Amino acid sequence: MAFNYISAAEAASLIKHGYNIGLSGFTPAGTAKAVTAELAKIAEAEHAKGNPFQVGIFTGASTGDSCDGVLSRAKAIRYRAPYTTNADFRKAVNNGEIAYNDIHLSQMAQELRYGFMGKVDIAIIEACEVTPDGKIYLTAAGGIAPTVCRMADKIIIELNAAHSKAAMGLHDVYEPLDPPYRREIPIYKPSDRIGTPYIQVDPKKIVGVVETNWPDEARSFAAADPLTDKIGQNVADFLVADMKRGIIPSTFLPLQSGVGNIANAVLSALGHDKTIPPFEMYTEVIQNSVIGLIREGRIKFGSACSLTVTNDCLQGIYDDMDFFRDKLVLRPSEISNSPEVVRRLGIISINTAIEADLYGNVNSTHIGGTKMMNGIGGSGDFTRNAYISIFTCPSVAKEGKISAIVPMVSHHDHTEHDVNIIVTEQGVADLRGKSPKERAQTIIENCVHPDYKNLLWDYLKLTDGKSQTPHAIRAALGMHAELAKSGDMRNTDWAQY
Ligand code: 0RQ
Image (cartoon, rainbow, N blue to C red; front, top):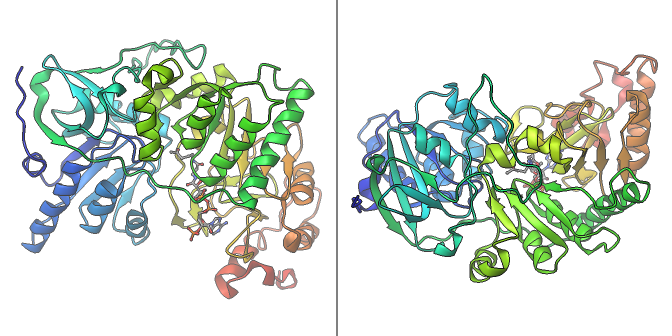
């Protein structure tokens, strides 16, 4: 079938007020860019005329500025799910302007299929190739593209020349059947391929192909610093010790690692610790550090949902595809983050906390209990089901005015039942096999910044010290209350409780 080649503006004009849009991509990698950028202009023009214009956005994870950024600024988003990292979107959410549904990434595609979020009116899919018989070859991410392509009435393709056709073959597209009687996802090792390298659609659904040349808008992360290096080294030392005492098999286990500077530092420390044998990744996001370690032979295989790498790193992968073809696979997010597969493979998960409490509960999403930061991302998919679940964070934030370890978390994402290990630059708290009271001791001793140790020991003295999970309920959020009052948790005075 001959496709209708149209401009991004023409494609955007097919999108009406009230539509729900399903996007390819996972993080800014592989996200459609040109049509959403034009859609923002339409929304602004309609708003100027006094007309309402807002859409619902369904994605794999965060997007780039040409989606969440421009659409938030144009006040064009009514509803969005799931994870995002965009500062303008964050502002709009915390001003109450956008309905944001922060669900686990593995659940996004199936919740769409189950009908929890309404209809997918149109899918916008970035591709490096589309064939006349309806085979869509994705670019740098899997995301929810297979599901939104199937569910949408209409599909727009952004055929992006910034992605080499060498990306063809990177993907393993697989959509599970829905319950009841769903069978297992037959992945038994990170490198297993179970699907097709393309999404097959009815070519009649493709209403337009927009040719672009728009590089991914990957965020660049600050260079490693002594603090992130220390956290990375603490994680690596802990895992080596666990391997030496036989808790982790001598062949090691596949790793999942979140996004950001700490994740890069952890991977770099693990990769360069030669007591750990070359290992595999079964993760959601592959960052630059992983690509370097694959080249060095320290990582044997990387299975992920996206290549969230800088554009020069991505180009390097495309240029070297003969080398990378049997060392990388990209999967839809419900497969890369599948709880079933995570548990089967025995993954070591490493994610980032905003704060943790004395009993091992973790807040990864909210500042001060009420303001959304980014979202839970895939951290919950992996944490609950991991062989060993690890959370990392600096022991303090904002020049020491905030302790990352508090008596009670101000928002709850990962419960004490799921969190095995907490790591700060101060050290490692191994919570496995411990009761809540034992966990509080090890967290204060090993992870808390020296400025806050006495404050937290003193907090425990306010409790009865005997209950299963001792708390002084009125004081439990006292450090947060002090932060709101004086701007510094160090001023907390327990005498008032
Ligand atoms: O503030 O931006 O004003 O400097 O929070 O913190 O230390 O720069 O760390 O960028 O790695 O983000 C948890 C948010 C950490 C992220 C989180 C302030 C701090 C700074 C950012 P500034 P850092 P990062 C992967 C899997 C979601 C869960 C997950 C995240 C800003 O890693 O979104 O891991 N994780 N998902 O100063 C007030 C505290 C604070 C605080 C830090 N206790 N109180 N502010 N900050 N701690 C994602 C995917 O699934 C795709």
